[in-house]
Amino acid sequence: MIYFGMPKIKMQNCCLGRGYQYPMNSRERVITTTNFKEPDKVPIDLNGTNCTALTYPAYSSLREYLGLEEDKKIDISDTMQGTVRSKEDILSLYEIDTRTIFLKDSLLIQNKFLPDGSFYDEFGARWKPVLYYYDCIERPLLNATSVNDLKKVKWEDTSDKTRIRGIREEARDLFENTQYCLVADIPAWGPFEGGCVFRGYDNFLMDLYSNVNFAQALLDKITEAALARWEILINEVGEYIQVAAQGDDVGMQNSTFTSPEMYRKFIKPLHKRIFDFIHSRSNAKVFLHTCGSVYDLIPDFIEVGVNILSPVQRGAAKMDIKTLKKEFGKNICFWGGGIDIQQQLPFYTPKQIEEEIKKTIEIMAPGGGFIFWPTHNIQADTTPDRIDSMFKSVIKYRNYKK
Image (cartoon, rainbow, N blue to C red; front, top):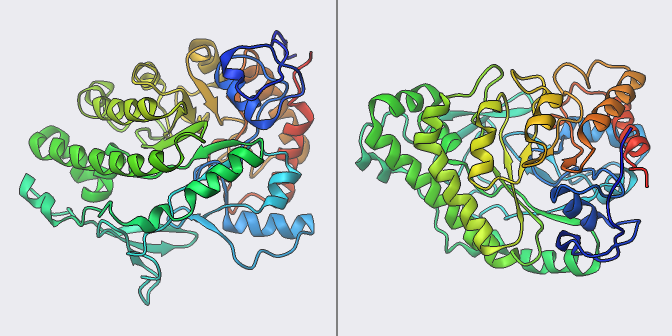
């Protein structure tokens, strides 16, 4: 049972706590729940970020299952993950409350695929296709040993205006002519994940212990690169967005990658720099994407200004949603965790999916602070009837009782 105590809503700026009337529009709905108040319905995301999306095999099969026209120009939101920006017909069908704003691909990397299907990104890392995804097979700092080696990286030219072409106009149009929550999609590597990409996970984790000056210098450079992208993005769309998403995977299936103490020493101050910048330049809520078991770090995330945690990988160690809601549900919002994509969604029957989602909403929705999405992108192993059942189940049980 979901209980209701939300004042009536009538305006978009429901974050101000004024008098409002039901029903809410999507923007009001997300703002309300991220302020830990109960909206009229649990908000639903799809496409808000490239980590809350369908992968292209799942997307194509879903369109066919629904009898929708084939999407002959699939819009890939993240090449490495194979994620798709679903077309408006699917977003409308499933009552999605979010729309995405994102930096464009740089002309420096467009159409730069090699004969084997691999490509080099802006920083000189080479990515090769492996089934549905891309793995990094060349790392620009793999053999680096000193701070001077950082000069080998092709640090991005932030004067490249191709990244922001048209996004201010797109954001203004969505803000003024629709009622959706606008999410600034992840624009840059987070410091920890970036270090692992540039050096390789094994090398970088050892750097944090045995080559500290180099590790710190690399982290600082990655953070500066992220801040540079955030500056150009917020300069264009900061007045229009309600949520700003940054990714940095610091969790594994059974634990964090580093000890909490190491996170606090090296990564936490850099997260604070990024999140402080976003808060100082916009009214957007800060959304942190990090996979895995991050229970031990959630108090730190709250302390450095994270408003929203995603994707809430409930199958990882210590990530039980009842515990998370009880211990942190008044201080951080959960954007995800709706159903597990590893052990549940690909294997449950439609009836089991419905029952699981009903249970999840009963746990996560009271008091606000919950936006529905599963525990990560929906993969190729999930059949379209299960995806359809998931969204229809959310729609069925999303209403708060007045």
